[in-house]
Every structure is written in C-alpha cells, then in structure tokens.
Length: 139
Image (cartoon, rainbow, N blue to C red):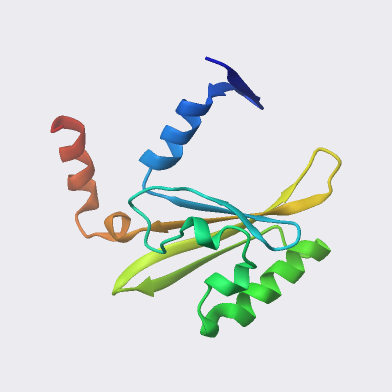
C-alpha cells in the first residue's frame, strides 16, 4: 500500500480515512477562499455534511444567526489578527465545543482553516472521575 508522507510520519489512505471516520469529532477544512473542501465523513456528526456541501461557501452551511460571527472570525484569520477561536454552544440541549484554527503553510501564508466540533457533555458530567476509573477497568 502506498503511504502519504506527513509531518511526524506516514499513513496509508485507508488508515487516514479510518482515523477520521472513527473518532467522534467533526473536522471541516475551509480553504483560503472560505470554500468547504473536505469534511470528516463519520456517523458521529452533530452537524451533517454531504457531498453537496463540498464546494459551498462556509456561510451557506451555517445558520443565519451565526453567519455574522463566522464571517468576522474568518476575516480576522485572513488578516492574521486571530489564529483560533474556541466556543461552547448548546445544541439539542447538549454542550458542544466548536473551534476554528487558522492554517498556514511552511511559508506562513494563510491556506484556510479547520473547524473542529465535538460534543462535550460526557466531559462535564458530575462523577466523571469515577466514570474514568470505570472505563479503565471495564471494556
């Protein structure tokens, strides 16, 4: 199998796809023109993406009430004023972490951003220490 060279090692295409379809975190790559070019295709997604969303401007897939904030963050990333933003929202009565990270190539040029979304209710549960211990001993 052919491998893909990456900073820190190499993976096969199958391994890379399996990583992104297994972990319960959503990733969306938005290019330098704010166009969605890739989304992790896993069944855990809270905010569904389809192949039809690829090629759309990122504002087309965000609800109207959040578009102004998303637009401002992207403008700040383009200008270099901001490298990331981490917010916590409630979606269907559960806490969700949404982070945008500005991406730059080896020359320091802005090439887009990655949006990372994850449900975090299980991290906020009371008794999480005991839950963690139970997970160690029960598979």
